[in-house]
Each structure stands twice: as C-alpha cells, then as structure tokens.
Length: 273
Image (cartoon, rainbow, N blue to C red; front, side, top):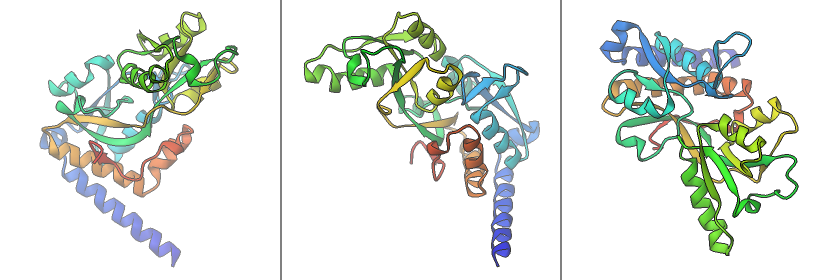
C-alpha cells in the first residue's frame, strides 16, 4: 500500500511539473532557457568552487532543479548585486536568484517568489573577550554590506537596544560586501560585523576559531527569486516548480546538503503572501 501511495504522489508531481512548464511565457519556451542573475560571492548560497571555478551553492542547485522541473536550461549570468533589479526591469535577465531579500522597496519593480528564511546576525572575532553579546557592540563600529538591507536593520536594532537604554548608538560602517567586512574585522578596523545567519556556520567552518556569533538573528527575512512584477505567467510557473520541489522532497534535500534545512519554508509564496 505504501508503494502505491508514493507512486500516486510522484505521478501528481510529474503532472504538476508538466503544467507549469506549459504555463511558461512563449518567449521563454522559444529560447528554451531562463537567464538568471547571480553574484557568486555569498557562500553557501552562491560561490565558485575554488577547485573547479564552477558555480556552486544552494541557489545554483535549486535554480538548476527548477530548470529541470520546467524543462528548460538555466543560463546563469554574473551581475553586480546592485544592478540586478534593474536588469530584470530592462529584461537583461529573466530572474534574480542570488540571496536577495524580499523588501517592499524592491517589490515596486519586481515580485519575489519567497523560498528561504533567514536574518541578519551580529558576530565578532573569537579573540574579543570584551564582546560576548550583541549589546556589547553599542557605541562600537559594526560593518556590513552596504548593498543589503542590513545597515538599516542594524540601525533599527541599535535604536531599540542601545539608544533606548541610554547607551551610545552602534556606528554602522558600509562595506563592499561580507568578505570586505570580515577583512576589516580581522584588521581590527571594526569591532563587529553582520551578515546573514545562514552564512555564518559556513564561514566559521572555513576559518576555524576566528569568529563567534553573538546571540540570534536580529530580524526575520525572506529570501526570494526576483521576477518582473508584470510577468504573471513566469511568476506562476516558477512558483509552481518550487512548490513541486518542496512536495517531492528535493528542496529539503538541497538545503540539507548545505546544512541549511532549518531555513526551509513550507510553501513558496509571492511577496510573502
């Protein structure tokens, strides 16, 4: 009986995948590929394998799996992060899949298929005995990528947890990226840094005994695939493919491969709804 039930589920998923493939915009069907923007500098979400120089990470594995569900090729295109939303708007790319946070501001141009949950987290050098909690960073310099929403999140947290309690505000330093923030931290130009909680375990494993996390993530955020908000057919097809991957277990298997099963969601939503 168990085998029969599993077979029925598998058939249903296959039928759904065929339906989503058929729902793709004609332009995508004609070219047979989906052009997806990525910036491989955010492991383990996306990076280049140092041994082979090939794209690797959660987004790469999941994006390629979506392509298989839809019966099309995923053409990865490396683009600077700050140019990605505009690249969708000007149709240079069909979609962004590069650890991008779903925000109301970005929703003015794109719609997000939310597929991952995370949040910004403070950390510092393991050798800093004077900093053991996030509150110890009040009045100190904290760096993070200026291209993300993290500077605003730090300022918001500081207002509630430093200034509101009579402590000096955190001094937010905009870095070129998370790697730059870590470099400045190691050089003692910063007292702390912030990056996505999903990336910290990976970085700490690469640079053992170098960093220590401080408390938990300071906010909860959804990571999404960005698509032109005026392209409902593509949005629906990709959302359907992601939910098929969730249903057949492939989605959790991919996240587990990178140690991020705890960041899984139950259903892929559009703009958090």
